[in-house]
Each structure stands twice: as C-alpha cells, then as structure tokens.
Image: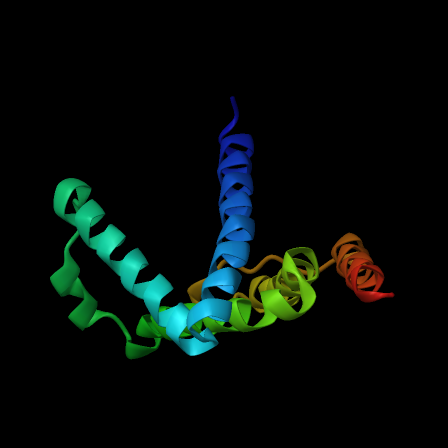
Length: 146
C-alpha cells in the first residue's frame, strides 16, 4: 500500500474521532459549562498522553525549552478549538460545526502551504484547490440552510 494512501486513511480515522469528540464534548459542556467541559476534556487528554509518553515515548521532552516559543502555541490553539467545539456543537450540531471547522482549516492550510509559512514546504494554490474551497463553502451554506 502506498504511504500517501495509508496516511490519508489514518487522517480519515482522526477525522472520525474528532466527530465523536465533538458530540461527546458538546454533551459534556451542556452539563458542566463550555469552559469547564473544555478543561475536563484537556485534562483527560493530557493524562492519556502522559501515560502514552511514559510507556511508549522515545523523544526528548526537555528539548521543548529549545524550540522557538511560537511553536508552543499549539496547545493554546488546541484549547481554543476544543472550547469552540464544546460551545458550538450543542447550538448547531456536529455536522455543520465540522464543515465550518474543515473550511477554516482548508483556507488557512492552503495559505500556509502557498507561502510556505511556519517552516512548511511551499505548495502553490491552483485553480482546483480554489474550486474545492469554494465548494466547501457551498456545503457550509447548505448544511446551515433551513
């Protein structure tokens, strides 16, 4: 099996996990509050990752002190994402929320790739990608239309 297909399938499973996580965290947020639900989700996720690092980690956690400080913002962005999901899913549902999230990811991802931002490889935006992004916004409109 070619690696590109394998990684695409792995990303597909990750997307499925995010859909379940959205509904689970949305329900949690309705019971305990949006900010509190996000905190609980992050605490449990952090504990899970701590166990994974203890038993399977092969990296060097102390190297985190040597990276550029902006590279540590991923945790902040993750917290923003989880909070938005906990807050938004109960109001508009999982599918419309995920379409909006994916649209945001693709727009910014295409910009990051096009300019090679944040140390990434430069991959230019072409007409097909622009059409794909526009179609995604059409789907966002259709998911939210009554």
